[in-house]
Length: 88
View (cartoon, rainbow, N blue to C red):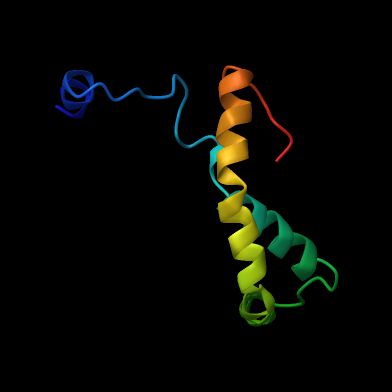
């Protein structure tokens, strides 16, 4: 039904999955969180959750804005490379 709607309304879809890590800025967040948490590896599952919550709170609004602002460039690169890997 959604495909028909898109066709009938002239909406183009990208020819690769929307779940591509290059299209999901949250992947950058997870990578940064992993780096931060692993600077002092957790010693227990409780310590792990404490560290994740602590590091999550240190993420800045500017970091989030930068990720959102990068989307236009990401999509353009993905279009140019026909969905192939990009460095994001």
